[in-house]
Length: 234
Ligand code: GLP
Image (cartoon, rainbow, N blue to C red; front, side, top):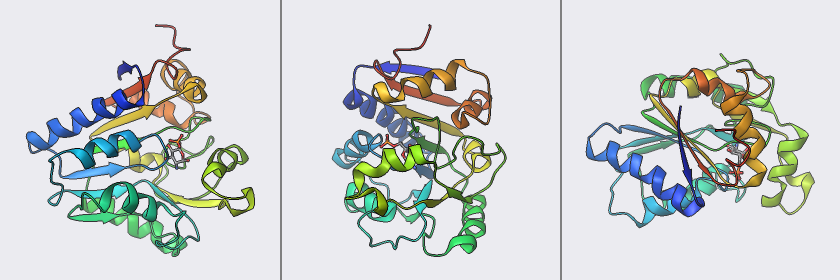
């Protein structure tokens, strides 16, 4: 894994953007895997402000809350539209169908087969989750329905009016699906991610820390700010 330590999330967004720009310039970016949460926002801002045109690139998103319609303001469909797609349309943008449960999982795996991901953007949960793959998820899982852990529900509560409004389940690309991406760029900012970053980079590869599996991928770039990197020993 390659580690890039940056001062803050603005620089992190610029750094990640450089990788995307390079892949665009060398015509190696056909499918871009996207993530939600606050972490990728500075990258999306860079993309929005760029002169780049993504209308020949397919995007696939990692996850979606179960039970939320695409036009629900808390859905990840809505989030992506708001922060990226309304400014930079892609050739086609795939996001799991939150209203279609089990059928959506198989359908999504077929989409990923048809559109293998060239670069996957990832954030990381405080407990080391990637996508919505919570601790304990088997490393070979395909797209599946997930019961969110209390810590994830609590962390995501800030986007909702009340805790009761936070969905308790989601559809997520599995770890098996994520690992098929040719290149993975994981972003992490702030002190609340420091333990997860240490466990991911310096701890054992264990299903208790879903992101630790990335140690076994041959093309991962971790972009962390100094706060998220503060517990690293090297
Ligand atoms: C959610 C998303 C993840 C994201 C994580 C961290 O659980 N499903 O993809 O990485 O939150 O979110 P944030 O970037 O807001 O800290």
